[in-house]
Image (cartoon, rainbow, N blue to C red; front, side, top):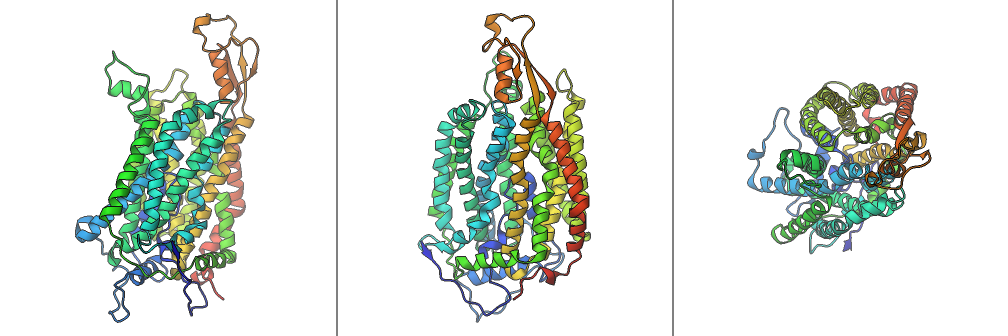
Length: 580
């Protein structure tokens, strides 16, 4: 691969941005609410100098091989009130749009597994602390800013600027998923032994797979700038929304439902012939999509030719730009806000669904809950975008912050009131309401802060600016999670009580429990139940940590976050610009 020399500029106040940066992912794609960011950009009515879209289009035009200074200056941006549908696009843009959707969809497959399905499958064999370790697998999407300049500046002209990365990354990802599919059952079994002693090895394999997806995402984001014509660049965010959301939805909600043996036996098998497995298994699912990765990559290599680009941006240009942004006092305050703002919701976001499963809530009911919530979330996302055009976005963010704290309290009430006899229709409706409330407030916060990012970003370096802010925002949601999950186990007090009347030996799945011991961890809980004992939970660490998180959220919000947000919301745009 060749490394391009840095481009010299006579503009002293800012460093030129890399064209890749203008479509960098802003959320790490950890869940379906992240797709709302694309809707914000798609729905913005006023494309002015304060919008990064004009800078993105400029970079796209200058990067094309057909660009010539003798050509007339094209119109940039969109006229107010103008909008296009998919069928109004040119045939070329339609094909390229569908290609982008496919590439983003492939990224969503491993992400839906790593951030959704796998933690739920692990819960039956490992503790919350071990699941906290596995949450590290999602970190590459929160840290990809650090290597995105390399992906943008290093490539070979023989393949093209973006295909130089997409083709090898997708090939490695495909073979990795096939290999992981052949080993995943054994790896999960080993991870569950001795309460997660093998979890670190299992986590690093998934970390590597997510790292590949994050790197592919950088290249696809940059390719979107030249795949679509300049007047239709806004459709790149739509492609990201549709593709990533669809991939994550398939790997999370659909896979969990069809992986459940109860769901399969109830709806797809005769009552006289139930089986112990679902219609989908994790190993078969990974192998299928591994081969799908390879087929798509082969087709991309043979059938799609990348347009030649004139890239002269160097790696150090973007790193210098990042450093200049970080030196702004307002940005430093905003970074602190991002790093502490999500602590108040961590126990609810990370543990509530797992605790429902622990209580006896079935996988298929949980999948149904998410299935119902998904279209509601997408529908409301449109109106959230409209609110952010009418009201100051960070004021909406503050309102949603309080609502999200209330949702965390409501979630604890729902878990506490789990019916002793199992899930009822009324309780299922309560869970659905709780889930919709939590995800709605999460979506409002995400869309509002994304709109504020777009507003304050310097249009000359908009992509780098927004990616940096999004990376810090994502990190604020990922780094506390491992500690919260570990504290849930730490604060849990449970004792395994031996059976008063020894059961028959053939009914035991393990050694008979003859004396009391702690069963706070998942492995000890299984040993207790298999030995005929009863695990008596006197203090549930989930309740303790959820209250602690809510209190921290209230104190930080009214003590620091709200005053600081009110102050930065009122600042003029020039306060967010890099100057000499």
